[in-house]
Image (tube, rainbow, N blue to C red):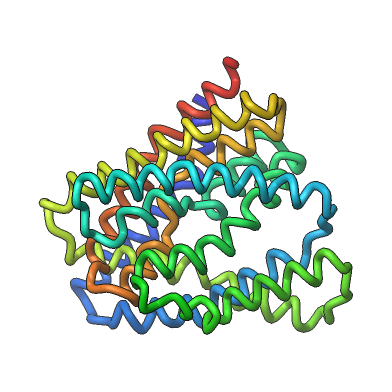
Length: 294
C-alpha cells in the first residue's frame, strides 16, 4: 500500500498535466507540432546537458551500465521488429513504442523514494544510453529511412554528448550556464505532457486495442529482459532493482513528440503513451512487490 501511494504521488502530476492539456482544447486551440518542436529543439537539449553535466561518472561503471542498457533495449526492440514484419504492422510507432521506455520521469523519483540515493544513481547510469538510443534509433523508426541523417541535426543529441564529455572529464561548467540549462530544462516535461493531453482529443476508440498491445509488450518484454539480464549477470540489491525500474517502464513521452513531428500519427502516439502511463499505475507496484519478495 505504501508503494502504491508513492507511485500515485509520482503519477498524479503526470495525469493532471495531461488532463489540463485535454481540457485546454475545449477552450483554445494550439499547434501541437509547434510545441513538439519547442520541446525537441530547446527544452530537450537543456535537459540532456544539465542532467549529464552535473554527474560524476566512473568510466568502468558507465561501460557496465551501457552494456546492460543496450541489452534491455535490444531484446524488446528486436522482438517488436520481428512481430511487426510477421504481422504486417505498418504503424511506425509500434517498434519505437516498445524499444524506447520512459527512462527518466517515472524511474528517477521511484528509485529515489524506494531505494534512496544509491538507487537513483544506478537508474541515472542506466538511463544514459537511453538518451542516445532515443535520438538515433527512435527518430529513424518514426521517420523512416529518409531520416537517417536527422539525429545529427538534433541539438539534444549534441547536448547529451557535450554533457557526457563534461561529466567524464570533470570539466568545470560556469554556474550561470548550469542555471540556464536547469531553468530551461524544467519546462520539458510539463510541455510534453500538456501537448500529449491536448492531442488525446484527437484519438479514436479504435486506437485503444493497438495502444494496449504496444504498452503491454513494452512493459512485459521489458520485465522479461530485466529478468534474463539479472539472472545471467547475477545482479543483486539496488543494481537489480534499478534495472527492473528502467526496463519495466512504459513507452517514453518522446515517442509521442516524434510521432507528431516525423509522421501523421500524432494522435495514435498520444494514445500509446497515455495508455502506457495508465498501465504503469498498476504494473509498477507489482514490479516493486516482485523485487521485495524475490
